[in-house]
Image 1 (cartoon, one colour):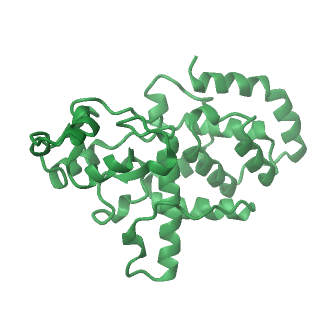
Image 2 (image 1 turned 30 degrees about the vertical axis):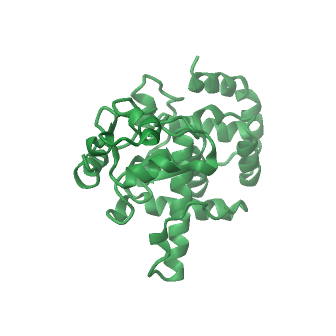
Image 3 (image 1 turned 90 degrees about the horizontal axis):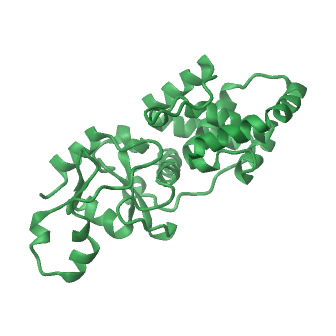
Length: 274
């Protein structure tokens, strides 16, 4: 039984308790609350979308909602995610027009969504920490307000990519967070509009992130690793064992926000040194 179905069962078993709690408040979800829920959806793995998750409990308390109600909302949001529906899973199928609208706004402008949802999280008293992998470009030649919004975007991007790949490098399976980078497919400096878009991201080890950024490796449309033949021809035994061995192997696909083939094509054409 997959994660989403387990979540469905868990939520259904708690539905009576959820209704009793929410009947006390008897209020509709506001746009600000939906921004918080979407932010949380992006940054939690599917297996953690349940009412007993401490993160969901903490957010629900700050919002004045029951954990079951918030978990239910997150599973509702999953029914809007093409990555979920493409696998035959459907979530709970009772999303509102407002949820669909906010989802569409998120897809159309990731930068604004990151900023607005971060503000919504701050408004319920759950301010976030600073990001741990902010690129150098974001700190050069920008005034403080721009730096602040850049930090918000980078924090959102990293956490969303981490959760999408369940905290493992999509090439090697490495799971030590200190050695993982949310790598941009189209380089940060090449495309401002997609700096925060998680479909422009791959979760890579620090070594493979550097190889990807340097054009030594790339990913094809069928999600397999390709290593530059120029480098494969060398006699560096460590390179062969740590990078060359993955040539032709498929990456581990994310649970959500699958990498865009358009972005991967850009990387092959403009970055990869094949």
